Length: 474
Image (cartoon, rainbow, N blue to C red; front, side, top):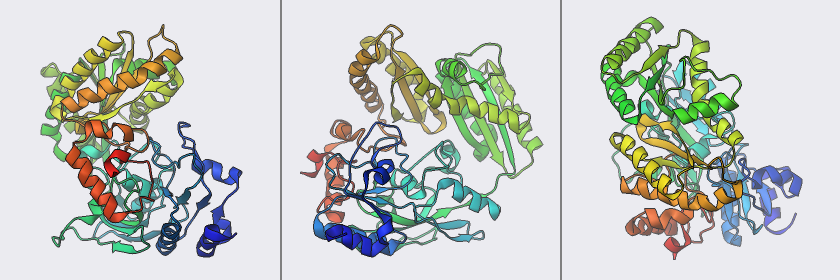
């Protein structure tokens, strides 16, 4: 190897510089099959120092770099473009658990550590790391940080930004910022950590992190509650919160259309009710208390909900198998959507108290454009995050729906903006939504973001074409 590739091989070893098409294929195509790129090489560093040296070499040669963790992005944020000029920087070799502190409740890890391995390491010392995602067996901590991942436990524990104390970041100029602090309090200036979390690898490459741990829950109580509509679900949320406090870990909302879809496509899915209700809520409590006390607390809340006519029916899981069956309904929605056909997917958030209003308004707006389009709406109602998905009308072809989908997306996003919401709650902007940023972000926000990009990465080599629209950088 000569030139840049020779320099990279000298840094990481020749076997960790992949250049043949067969070896690079998994790295230049996203796992959803939506984005396909090309690269001159995939480089796999083993340390923060090697990442920094790679960035310095690429800066000197004007070579774009696309950081990548587990390659599980929902928005094409880790896929290079088709030009073939970029270097993909895969951090999967950086997979060390550096330190666990059960007294300070922290764990320090490399960015390439798989999320499920953090769960295991925490559990081994009687602690709990609460980020829970469908891709936790393959997504990495660096990717979780780059997109400020959320998941089903945000209601109680917050997003990755709230779960992180310190970072180590390789900067585009080859320097390393060592911010691996475990401090809970530090009032010495700007929170640099928060700039890198959610930046999708456009400001620097996260190489390590100090994460918060929590006491391991000893008990869980899980219930499925049939409700008449989203308005009742929100009232139920307030009631359960009032009676259960911080024990409320998850509050997942699913319309009847979601359940119909799951029952049709997921062989092992069952509902504990005689018929599919208009909407369903999955409630989960967790605590260091015992199961009986937690179940009793949840039962008391559900009795109150029934008396207030918020719940049409409800059932509390009596064992782990029943709890898993309840979660199977929620987790099966994405799989069922894939089997049903192409969907126009929207990862939006609005203020929690206005969720029901938004759903009604979006339903009306979509129906005005195409009355037969099917609405498949579910998500984390407790933190204001909805996956507002649309399927083609039964009598509509896939080709016609593909033409219609961008218009439907505009309608849904316009409604989210009208409710002071966001067009990306937890999936990131990536390539998927970068063109929408000027419509939904205020000019002053784009101006400040572009200024930060210019400060950290003036040559615009880090993850080009992601997060920031070109107009914002000019």
